[in-house]
Image 1 (tube, one colour):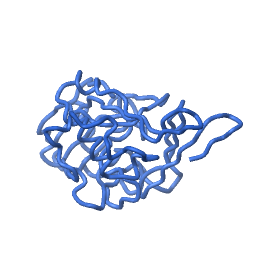
Image 2 (image 1 turned 180 degrees about the vertical axis):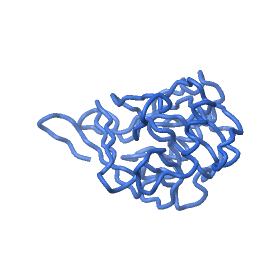
Image 3 (image 1 turned 45 degrees about the vertical axis):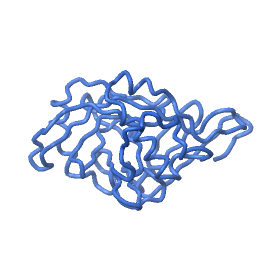
Length: 231
């Protein structure tokens, strides 16, 4: 983290294996991928099963927001427990109104600028599940409440209506046979900094490591999800 005292703009840089450099300011969130290095994929915690490091409990909705495991952290990405609790709170909601009504969770307060470094929200997003990645046969289409970072001034276009870019490409979760239509990445323990095992990937051409086979199902996912709004 650094503060440019001439401009008054702070900049946070998070670097993790197989994750692009992401720069955040309190006005604008910008995502950049270093040429020929890194990937828009997100890696899970090495501590265990990425998707289920912390089971979603019945009392998740009553968890503090931001969760207690995130108290005092400069970034949610330094703690898989914080990220797991963030995921649990959002996924505890089973309706769009409850999901988006969760509100903002500010993490990493910066006294010098009076702002939080990371603002987390819950979003109601389309999820398409396939029977397998080779046939791309759709098993189900649903919506789910997922945690995500505030996108600032970044565009949030529909990947079904043009060439996708990192921020708004389909996100593949091969272990769950899911394509998730979300701006940014769904937050969870898999996104902890320093992790080494890939869990969530952006469906883009020319990335390293290559996008998983499930990304070939993007067109069937678009047909199944229809004109579902992005969050």
